[in-house]
Length: 155
Image 1 (cartoon, one colour):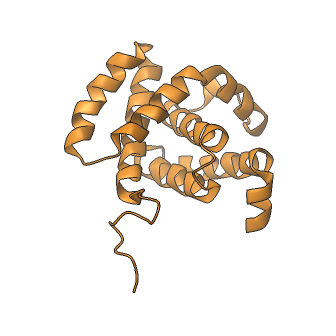
Image 2: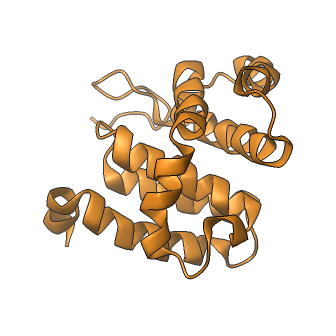
C-alpha cells in the first residue's frame, strides 16, 4: 500500500508542509535581502501568513534564521560555483541559493536530492525564466563537494 502524497513520512516530516515552509522562507529571505531589516521582524511578518497555510513553521524559522546567521560563510562557500559575485546574482536566485546552501551544509538530515529538487522547483516558480537552470548547475556542483558520499552514491 502506498503512502498518500500529503501524509507525513515515517519520520513524521510532511513533504508538503516543508515545501510550503521553503517557499515562505524564500519570500522572507528575499525581503530581508532587500530591506536589510531585523530578522525577527521579517519572520514575524511571514509567520502570520505561514500559520494560515499549514506549513512547517519551525522549519521556516530555522531556514530564515540560519541563512541570516550564516550569510557570510554561505556566500563564501557558494562563490567557487558562481560565475559572478553573490551580490550580482538575481535577488530571487540569490535567496534560493542561500537557503539551499544552508540546507546542504547545516541540515544534513535533509537528503541532498530533496534540497536540489526543492530549490529548482522554487526557482521555477518565483525566479527568472532560466534561473532554475543556473540554480541546478550551481547546486549540483556544490553538492558533490559539500556532500561527496551522498552525491557519489547517487551517480
